[in-house]
Length: 226
Image (cartoon, rainbow, N blue to C red):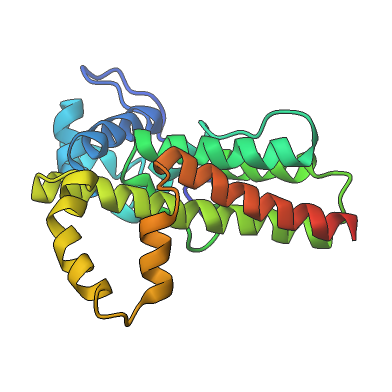
């Protein structure tokens, strides 16, 4: 029986009451502060002021705990707006914002479908928002948006982590590596790339995300209208 279906132990009159919701909240607190490596049943139990063995009545493994924390973040993600395009745009933006609030979330999405109640409610809302679109177009369209968002937020989170690890923000990194690129481009081996970097518009992270999303939504619109 999956953790979503397994009942919690009955309440007991103890000094530190426990529930899955309290366990998940404590795990998210640890992950937000110090990353997934800071999350263990022992550390969660310490935050809650209970012995680690008490958690096993609610959660059998760390994998179950991670399933629960991911599902809790999915509760923050719902599509909004009128029409399928605004619904998919808001779904993408909400997922991105959730990943920036909880960096570790980007490490746990993108694999097999999440089956928790909040993740299923997110997908239900997305499919319903495309109710007027043929299902064989709607489901791949949602999957395409999700795939784009996963790739985009992982790139953004990787950049943030690199900034912390090196102490250099994006502009400082570019300034440090600029002379190397100029020397390389001067060889004439990469003319198209040199032109793109020198002459192209350099977008910030928000603009890059929204521009790429517009390209994707334009393609979906073309498929729907064909």
